Image (cartoon, rainbow, N blue to C red; front, side, top):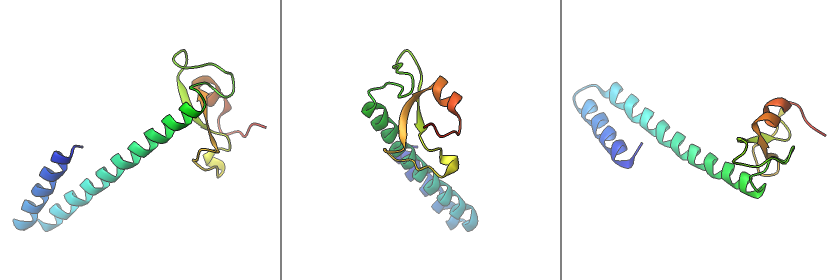
Amino acid sequence: MTVDQIFKAFATAEELSERGSLEAGKTLANDLRIAELNDMALGRYRRFRFDVLERDNFTCQYCGRSAPAVVLHLDHKHPASKGGTTDMQNCVASCEDCNLGKGARVLS
């Protein structure tokens, strides 16, 4: 969502509230704030993902294959489903085959 789209949508929300549809205006404004926060979070995730892949030289840390020959994922060494955190120490570059094959297991 661009800045122009956000401003237009807020203007629409204000018009709705002025015409008596206050609840509809509040809902639209709230939805737009959530969308904006989601866009910001997505941008931070993309940057984080790139930083991990760059640190690992765009190479799977399990089998050694590199992009563009393989699709690379982020893998949690300690799975998020088992309390692992999404940070630089716990995430590594992993090819699709290794990541999907590993699943939610902790490798020693």
